[in-house]
Length: 109
Image 1 (tube, rainbow, N blue to C red):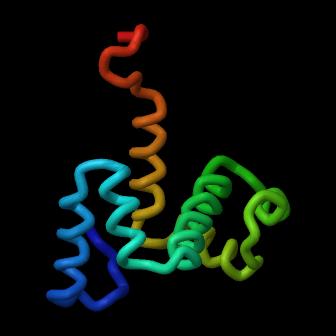
Image 2: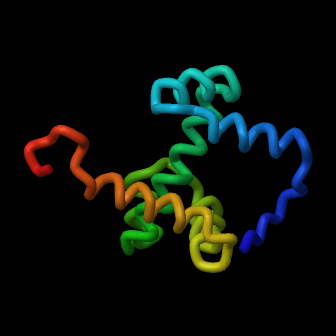
Image 3: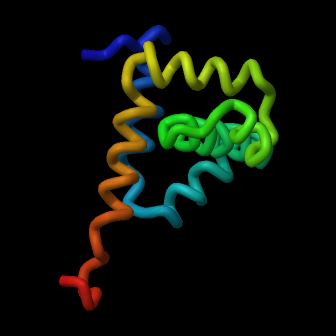
């Protein structure tokens, strides 16, 4: 169940489909470099980093010492982690699963 607070529109649906069509990180870098400025991509990456740190138990002070974001940004991300639609949690869980899964052909298989 989605708690999406943005209006669903055809153009946003197309953006979602475009993101889902990307096959690997290189394609993602290519698309993001066309879609956003360097500052915008950096800001989004920092938000995900803040979410991961908070999810892993870091305090606001610990987060601020590692990521150059404002206290209000940390608060907003923490609020989304606790009461949001679950998007951060879903992505963090999937990233954690990927980190724990050995790549194909590795010695751990």
